[in-house]
Length: 195
Image (cartoon, rainbow, N blue to C red):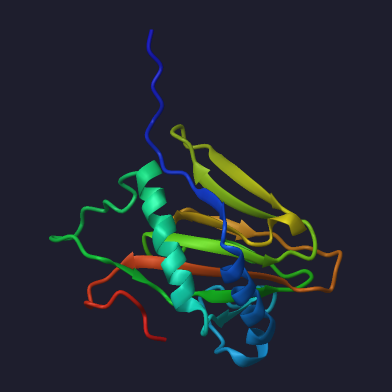
């Protein structure tokens, strides 16, 4: 008798380097008032607000590039979409900062691109980040990541089309801050978005 699992893709959780984390946290603190606002299809009155990351994006991209290589070693083939006539290099999209307040949430959604990431910068209250997916018999499954203060500085790296949600919290007036971004195929001969 043999047992065989279906091939699937997972996600990576890592701790970002302390120096990079400190720089990101500093920008998050002043970015809500100073950085350009990001309007998305999720923008709504009860949804966390978004601002573009400006000053630390190149440092972050360098780290994300190394994480993407690790991901491809563990889960090879996630980028093999096979709809292009030629392979294209990856392009790092402009990251954004999420400012989530009491009662706000980020609804279940997917991202554009091949890979995405979220970095937890400030977690004032325990909260949940959750992936949803269907198993091979069509049942909806969840992979919950319970977050506390000790998870600040951690990153989750995952396929962009993996649905996910950030649940609301109601026990503090402090702001939950995270940084997210996407990696796509680059058809413009540039590895980075300029914005």
